[in-house]
Length: 386
Length: 133
Image (cartoon, rainbow over all chains, first blue to last red; front, top):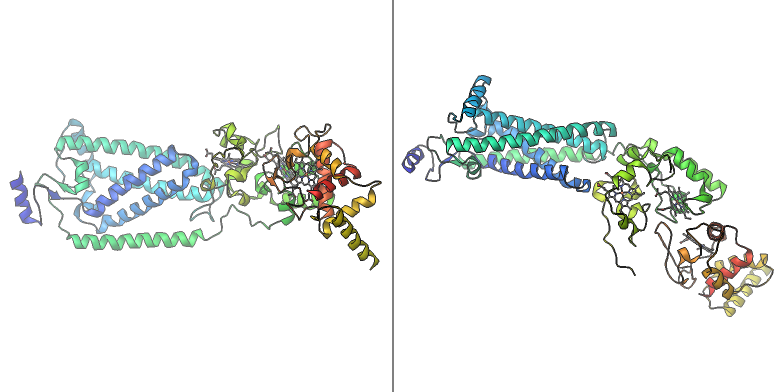
């Protein structure tokens, strides 16, 4: 066995007991980088609290970068990295799968037809996932490169598709790993290890011929172009103001008159009818008297009327427009508020440094802007009573 | 001219009578109530009024101390958990300088605590207590 690999080594560069070079370094870095990125995205997407969204986003940007790189590397990489080396006819593919099911498989140095199909399926699903992800981020959260272009509604619609794609991805990954294990058994070649070392033991494989220096140079140039272009596009488009946020003229009267007893609630958190109800009942305001002179009431009512949730397209405004029929003046009684905070222990709200559900700003550091970003949520740790 | 003399002389008198925490604005507010009152104000009565548990108001707030803490020098807290700077003038020298603001809060807080407007006497006693603290 080692004799044969020595012979093939005589043909092409260094070969030894370690085997024959099949996967170039960029392909391997891509593969394992993708494993890390996709695992992170799946775990944060399905399991983690939504306030870890920014980790999910970074995983998504990493995946987008890797996929873009790989699409170009498929034309400029070494032999087995090129798409041309693993495009098979449908007949070949079906034949291979049939053979495979019977427990034997013709030998391929690079991707076999079933593996190739998997590569294209994974690339396609991941491409759709990252694109839909950026659209959702822009529409629902008013964040990222598309914040200025996508409405909440489109974002909300794509959430379903994004989820469906994520489930398909998981099925593909299971099939990919299963196929890899079976193929390894059949061929006696540990394919997972081959993707780490880059080498296949069986010396009948044709090694790649592109010099390492060429590979590294090309990969660095392509990575720089992809990264640079991605960064420039992100910079350019994320500079456009988020479409869901209205430019709010600061109202000092509101901030002081409605900010004495609690943080001055952002006007996008309730619909017009609720604000009017609040302004008409200040003598009996959530168990307290908060009355104001008629003139101030009138001017604040007008301002709230103009800036209520109806004119905002943020996640909070869209969801909080539906109030509770029993307590139509309350934000924290709305069905959405209740469902989003249902997992928080009741005692947390009684903590001395929180005190009440209405103290949004204790947990949402961006409450004054009305954004209520996931990344701005943090429940303060309980303080010992003083 | 006569008016300024009057203001200055009352200021001096008040300053002599009590620890000098009150500035000119605070004195002007006090004068407003003095003019409306029949008798004089007492910090002692103000203290009792401040600490008393009242009925007739909103159930969550039976006393001024519900929000302003037992000691007027302490930092209070609204029912929505926002801190309230101490009422004692020694701790918060900017308080009680704006009659409109003082009246707004007497109106709200008295209705919340007592279920009615405070009398001039109650207001004056309360202020006298806070000015002395």
